[in-house]
Image (cartoon, rainbow, N blue to C red):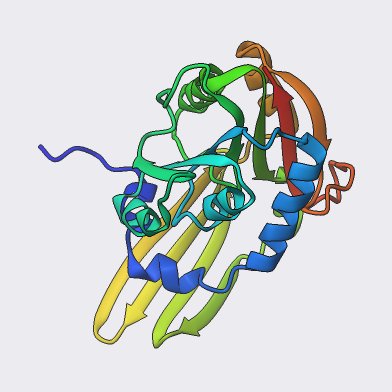
Length: 244
């Protein structure tokens, strides 16, 4: 019998995913990382782990600042592309975030741009936080950048269609059984496919419970990429900074 695959094990390896998200704001991402580094003040020799690093652009940005950076991602396709950036300051590995990568090793562990909450079982999310905690040096910082559940639900656009590179995307969003679900119907020539994104709607309190269970202390919570104060009703993001 074939083993069950999570949605992210297939979707992230497709060219459809690359096409749909090719216009992400890299300048905004760079400014966010700059502000984060200014806030955290890591030493120049700091070791940083970028969890769910994608194709490695943000890990490279950090390495270009002089930090020693490791990027991990479950997608072999992403890691294969990211490895083109490798040098003495940066390396990439295919790895499952539920497993500790290196024990008590990193000064900072970053999980950016809602790259969390994909698992069906809550215990798997807790296990991921536990692996992050285990990978941090004492005093090290964990940063998780997630969406603000309240804002997402209040601004949920249920239906959307767009054409990118001759690919038709019909997107339906819904809230089902505690998950934000995005159904993506694709038409490319005569080909028709359906993919899903399914992210658990993890609240601020739930994250704080995860951190507490893993002996991580919440130091600050921001509500957007400009690091403004978090507001549970109006903030677009939930950016949590915890310390081991």
